[in-house]
Length: 192
Image (cartoon, rainbow, N blue to C red; front, side, top):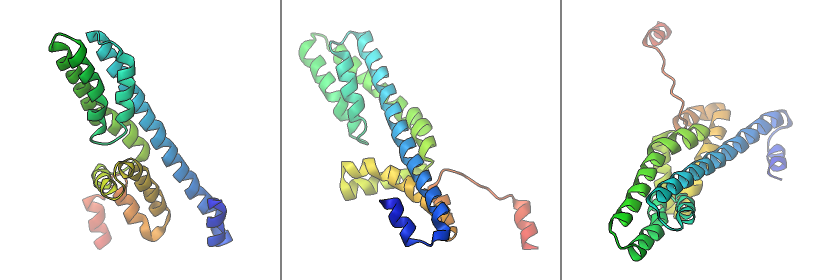
């Protein structure tokens, strides 16, 4: 329905360009979701391994809950760790087990935020990291947690759209994660 709408809005000569833009938008959205679920799966495995090593009962369900809640930016990792930490405090005599649970979730979260998400999700959506941070804050202010989740693919879609319109290409470049530098000598030659 949306494809037909866009084809009716624009001239027939531009239909192939519209189809290309829609295909690129679909690819960005699909790549974002695949990257996100890949990261969540890796987090679930890492959390499970850590919790099983220390001998926490129900390690796999706690790890899965924590990884699912990690989809919520900023607070999701904390919310996901709380059930396992509370369980460890309530059902283990030693203070060491709850501290180890906290350490495991902290290490996995650091791995996720500094390596997994930038490498897996960032490379699939190709958004400028600074723009991504700003978009997360704006999404949180406008729509709350749902906005924080949905605004990253939205910015990816905008980047694709801007990149297709000649007058908007500088904005697409600004939103993207591709850096193009013009050499100093080339600039001098153009000025002459």
